[in-house]
Length: 169
Image (cartoon, rainbow, N blue to C red; front, side, top):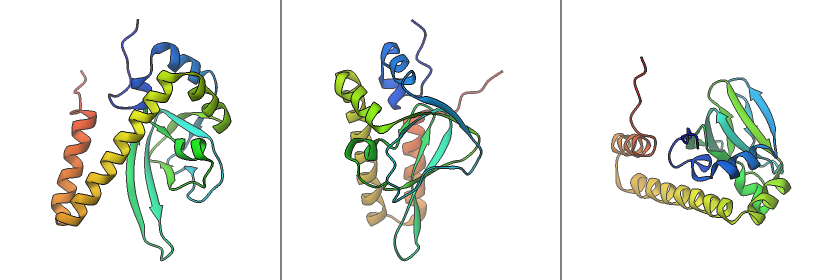
């Protein structure tokens, strides 16, 4: 068995080799330039995007024009899963931060995969739960701390999730 190359905590890391192979066989490989919107807030599309070699930012806006960064997602993460699972309009915009390679899986195909593969459903539930905890913590931070402390806490959380950078020779 090959070592798991996906960052800890990502959807792809949580899947077995067999499930990863099956899922990747269900979609279409796509490449995108920096600044490309994979998903636009309010759209009715339902595709799921598996980030294979990508860094994306997730943003949301409100009617008065204010926009906020909600999350950063990395290779191994999945985006678009909420709309794929419930059919609601997209809740945020997801844009590439650099060149990106992603696997697009149509919503109905992804739902079918999750329905017939309990381990994949559990992995998705774990990812969604982690996101909810992250979001709850950010709301608490923003209510209780000034901006520089909030920023420090976000950076600490990112380092805790993804680990320190590795030096290569």
